[in-house]
Amino acid sequence: MSRTSPKHPFPEAEPPAPATSGTNPSDTGPFPAPDVRPTGRVLRVGRVLALPVHPRSVAAALLLLAGLAAAAAATLSLGRLGVPLAQLPAVLGGQGEATHLFVLERLRGPRLVVAAGTGVALGLAGALFQSVTRNPLGSPDVIGLAPGAGAGAAVAALMLPGVVPVPVGALAGAVLAIVTVYLVTGTGLRDPGRMIVAGIGVAAMASAFTHFVVSVMARDQASVLSAYVNGSLGARSWDHAATIWLAVALTLPFVLALAGPITVNEMGDELADSLGARSTATRTGAVALSVVLSAAAVSVAGPIAFLSLTAPQIARRLSAAPGPNLVLSGTVGALLLVCADLAVQHSPLGDGLPVGLFTMALGGVYLGYLLIREWRKGTL
Image 1 (cartoon, helix red, strand yellow):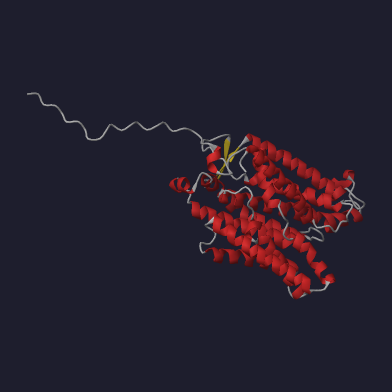
Image 2 (spheres, one colour):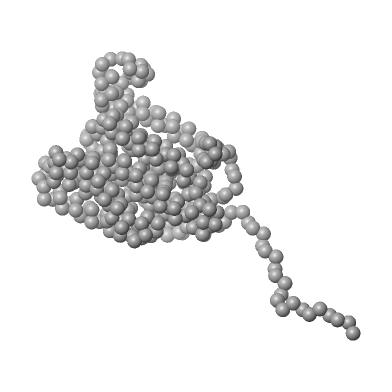
């Protein structure tokens, strides 16, 4: 009798389907899943930092830097006190008429440098925040930083005049707002949903407190506060310029070190953890750096609205590259704020107009464009 081998109780397993490169962008929320395949070149700094370099991003950055140089030249040369373009190189070298040197060193030079540094800080802050929360409409303002700065400025300017400088009060208010959000969430800065909900509540309370302080004070005293509530670059000094650029210089290495983990984190927490990106630590670090950069910007220019929202979105569309596009976001932020301040200085409404009102109008127009665009795509 021939012996037959018994049949296996389980059916033969189907071979695994071949992995496909890329995913459907509509399945990953507001940000498409980044393609992890290497594209372009990689710029290595030592053994610990490797930055992907995309040709389109480099070209966009060069164009933005050229536009920033043109806007800077226009800031220094236009107007009644402007330095003529033909004399601008000599004045920048420390030569020229005393009037032109005074304009460069005391009036427009510090204002220009502060505007560029503040734009870089807010652009980087917005790119970090939007990437780790995967929310294209997110910014540090959402978690109460700007309203908190306004409340702190109100206390310093109207309740403690001459005791606490207004920039210090604004910085303290911003830090207090973020600390409150950190404590209220119960999870620190790790949960984007809780962080945004808590931030909305803190922002509402801070705004109510600001209006209360303004309403009980005299009108002439309240005018001192208007610049820091809306954001202003008037009467800036080289001390303000040193403050904002020092903050950018100190945080930039940490920001660039997070570029790779943030790119992986955009694919989802589970996949990022499996690849060793440590999604929770990456999110906490990115939000903390975003808060530090935003607080530094608030301390020198007040809460400038919508810049940290629009700059990263424009950078993403210019580069069409995966990842947070940090360098490009900072460059876009600098160009936007310098151009906004240039428009404010030559506005028929007066030179004292806060630049934050202009960026607020610009952000409102851009937000309307995004809503119409998403509505036409059928995603709203």
